[in-house]
Amino acid sequence: MQTVVITGGTDGMGKALALTYLRRGDQVVVVGTNAHKGQAVLDAADTLGAAHCIEFIQADLSLIAENRRVVGRITATYPVVDVLVLGARYYRATRFVTSEGFEANFALFYLSRYLLGHGLVAHLDRADAPVILDLSGPGGDLARIRWDDLQFAHGYHPDEVMGQCGKLSDLLGVSFTRRYPHSRVRYVLLHPGLTATGFTGEYDTASAEVVARMREQGQPVEVALTRILRHLDNPPATPLSAFMQDDAVDTDGEPFDRASAERLSVITANLLH
Ligand SMILES: NC(=O)c1ccc[n+]([C@@H]2O[C@H](COP(=O)([O-])OP(=O)(O)OC[C@H]3O[C@@H](n4cnc5c(N)ncnc54)[C@H](OP(=O)(O)O)[C@@H]3O)[C@@H](O)[C@H]2O)c1
Image (cartoon, rainbow, N blue to C red; front, side, top):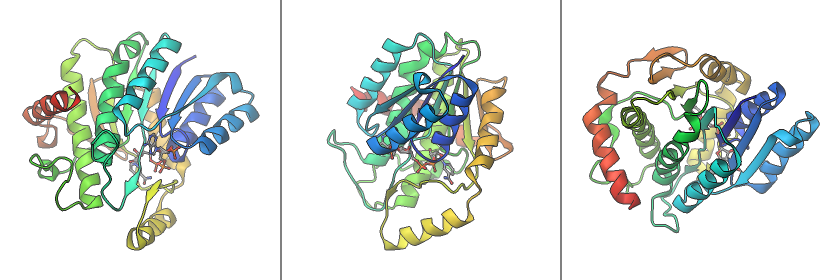
């Protein structure tokens, strides 16, 4: 039996993944903000006869304190974590600053992934074949990173922010695997393809129209699930790997620049202290 932690496990691909693991008899922890969605996952688990194998942690992962609480809860409850899926997403048409003073996308897509990965690494390393899967979507141009304005204080544009978040996730994968050279954790960055999911977020009229089209054009969640499970069930041999749908992405290439990863790591450590 594996222990699987899924952020964004109350909706979309994360929820489908949670139910798949429950059907297999694994222990699943889902994290999300919405109590109704959380209850729906608990109810679905009950229907599967797996009510004893699911925990819903209601937490806002755009808050540092909440990430630390989640890490504390998981490490206190489960001796081992086999799989950590980083799949929380929230679209914001307009800039929002959390009560802790961070731009919300930067906090949710980057800082949360940083805190959960590092916070759970010791528990992951107790597993036979541990995996961290980040669904942000790898590759792309490093120039997408606004080093002088990482939190988009000026000229906020949601698509640019999302593009940057994907890049920050890539660099996080690089610095994570370099920081734990002896770890058995396999860090996988995957873009599962456009998928018809909840597309959780706050949209304006224009972006709501775009997302409605994306929902129509997106592949069914089951297709994404097959792609995701391919990596989770057969973890890659190398510590860091990346995939655009079914195609491997070269993690020695420019988008995974080590100096940039180190730069981001130093900035992050300073921000969190
Ligand atoms: N769908 C696509 O086409 C696509 C393509 C490429 C990559 N991805 C990536 O795949 C992952 C899953 O996407 P999806 O489309 O399946 O997502 P989704 O259906 O929109 O669900 C988003 C999940 O994130 C959770 N979440 C949002 N804000 C949160 C917060 N502040 N704290 C904790 N949890 C929060 C939501 O839970 P609550 O509602 O309970 O808060 C929900 O479970 C994301 O990382 C996304 O960027 C998606």
